[in-house]
Length: 443
Ligand code: IFM
Image (cartoon, rainbow, N blue to C red):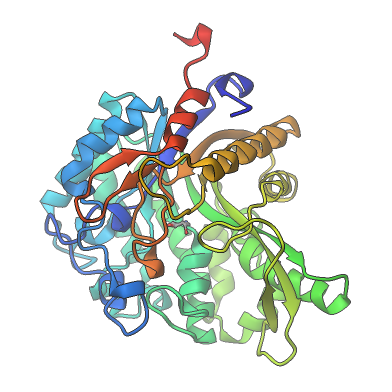
């Protein structure tokens, strides 16, 4: 790789990320059912109806997986804690085995010199709460804060940072408006409510974490480089609408206490009553922003469609196994825009960036190595332009459960054989390991 650790500021963190449902094995250790367990059983929702019951069996292989992170010379590990593993019914009864697991995970990180970056919600709503409407129910804010309190009382003394939610857009829009993720709704009223309640839950959870004395608390949002497919005014309007619903809705609520007019044009009539009253709690200060970035999206107007009357256009750039264009320039653009328009000097982490490829063991992995190389350069450029970027987490440590795509899409630095569950580091693991090896004067 062209750039190495010594090209980055002292203290810049390199790590890898995972999420509970995608790797742990939800059938182990007394975890409760979640909406992904049941969504996966619905016809046509997930490739081959695969679920996370076993996943990478990280629940039993945690120590070996942490060894792989440490052997790569990583500084930090980003993981999520599963709400239903801690509280199997989402509220009430605590699963001590679940708390013990996360306790061992955090201690295992610290023993290996890995800073634990925790995310509280990475997409698995406990089924008992999904029965009550999940993200469409305003009470979700208090349910989530209560869960945060239980897990924080056990591991909050040792985690390095806490993110409330991973990718609010996916939790709300992708899951309640586009129907691609659990709970699979395609309903503008449900979507508008989820779009607001996910922010409300973030705010309420921040309040609770502060009450518990926690610092280094923030949120992880996903951004795309949204571009109009042509120079036409109609396509420019379509791109502005998509930018508002995808890139601006959440960060604007959190940093300014407002929602973009272009998004309220569609969601406004379906919002919960008196949503304005929640904006002060939603926009309380955070300590860091996590940025997940993968690709750009070209957008065109679609007058025949209902609001937002947009359609995606397939771009000309090289694509990953997901069909996503490889566009590192969009990461630099995203980071500089966020710093300029929203977060100023607030510490920012790239909490996810990576790509899927149909890897087999022993391959050269050149596309992924080049992908990482170019995105690391983009981050370096953003730092040169003044962004307070403090770390980078590759998504993902392991090949894992890629939600509606099942186990087919391989994002890992480490290949997982889903029959034997054997782990084999890919060439990109070794390339990244060389790039982030300690600077000469660090040891
Ligand atoms: O696998 C997901 C992850 O759970 C959230 N961010 C995007 C990744 C790749 O699609």
